[in-house]
Amino acid sequence: MAQEKQRLLVAFSSGLVFAAGLVLGGMTDPKKVQGFLDVGGIASGRWDASLAFVMGGALLVSYFAFRSVAASGAPWLASRFELPTRRDIDTPLVVGAVMFGAGWGLAGYCPGPALASLAFGGVDVALFVAAMLAGMALAKGWQSRG
Image 1 (cartoon, rainbow, N blue to C red):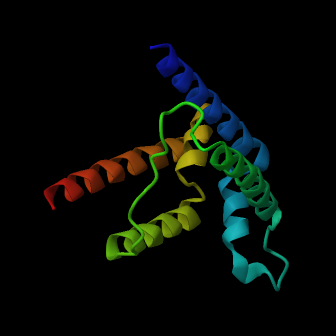
Image 2: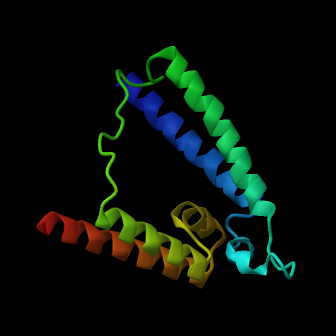
């Protein structure tokens, strides 16, 4: 039971740090995200490259964290690694990726930043999260039929 509490505390703390990073990095500002995704604006100077530095920083931290855990041979709070076994690229994966990218570009939110943005309120983010949860429920129901 103590290890389960420890795992929950680490997960909760990680979520808080992740949310703080999203807010500080500007990932919760839909206009900033859309400015980054507007690669057509590179030539005219409309493109906002600042989020590339946020993502680069996140990749750098992740790289060293994953190497540290891999070098230890075991996860910190589990008995074994639980890694995905599928390596194929199928139609549902591609369709899901396209839907994710289109939603991110149109709304300026993806799931993590949208949940972090709920702390600040706003009808737009509340509607996005409601639609996201409804879409997740629909997808889960659709997958359970097959």
